[in-house]
View (spheres, rainbow, N blue to C red):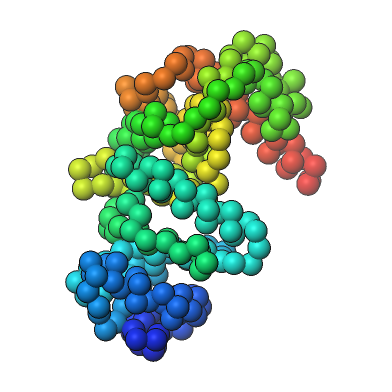
Length: 289
C-alpha cells in the first residue's frame, strides 16, 4: 500500500507509515524541482516517487523516480558536525573518483541541505550476487584499483608506529613476533582510503565489476589499509570458506595492484591486525564478565 503526500510541485509516494517520509518530504519540498530536472535532463516533471533503500541513524538512501528516469538520493542528517563531515567526505570522494568507474556517478548535490544524487545501478548487492570466492576476488581487485587512482601523499615510518597510534600496544606485545614484523614493514605513503570494511557496501555493475559506495569514513590512511581492514571482515563473514576466500582476495588485489606493496608483508600485517582486534575483543569480553 502506498500513499501520496504533496511536496511542493511534486508528489512523494512512500510506503504508508514509514518514519523516513518526513525527512524525504523536507528535502523534496526544498529541492524537488532541481532533482527532477537533473533526472529528466532539464525537463520538468509533475511528480517524484521515492522508495526506501536503507535507513541508518541520520542517513537515508532512497530510489527516486520521475517516471522516465531514476536515481539514488542519499540524505544526511544535520544534527552536528559529524553529519556535515560525513557528507563532505562522501561528496569529495564521488567528485574525485567520478571518471574511474569504481563509484556511482554523482549527478547533483546540495551543500546547504546535505544530499547527494547518484546514478541508479539497481539492487545488485555484490555480496549476495557472487559466490564468496568470486566476491572476494572482485573485492580485492576493486581495492587495488581504487588505491591506484586515489589521491595520495608521502609518509615515513612503519606499521608498528601506525598500529601504536591506533592504541594496539597491548595486543601487539601479546602476539609473538608482531612488533618485530611490523617494525620491519615500512609504510608506502598515505592514500585516500574507504576506511570502512562493511562488505555490503559494494554493488555489481552491468559488466560484472564492483562499484563501491558509502564513503562517509574516507580519509588518508597507509597504503594497503583497506586491504588490511577488509581481510578481517572477510574472515568474520566467511569463516567456513576462509581457506578459499582469502587466497581469492589476495589474488584479486595482487593482479590489479600497481604500487610498491609487497604482498607477503601486507598479508602479515593483515594477520597481525586481525589477531590484535581479536585480542581486544576477548579482553573486553573478559572485563565485562
